Each structure stands twice: as structure tokens, then as C-alpha cells.
Length: 50
Image (tube, rainbow, N blue to C red):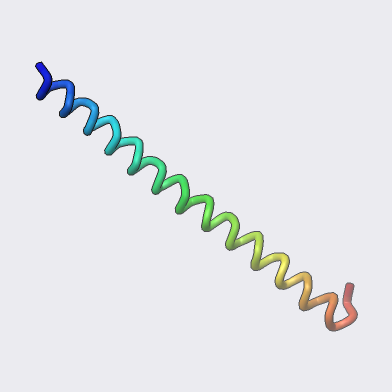
């Protein structure tokens, strides 16, 4: 019984970790896109087109 509980807890922890990695990767991509837009806008303002 202890072995079953240990395996179940390990499986649940592993699924949570993998899901968190995918979520963080998606958030990183979104933040990167926002940073690119801010950088583009800053370049436009630097050239006096703001």
C-alpha cells in the first residue's frame, strides 16, 4: 500500500511539474513579444516619429 501511495504522489508531482514548464514557456514567449513591441516603439520615438 505504501508503494502505491508513493507511486501515485510521484506521478501527480511529475504531471504538475511538466504542466508548469509548459505554462512558463508560453508566458516567456508572450513577454518576449511584448518586449519586442516596446522596443520597436522606442526606436520609432527615438527617430522623432512618436
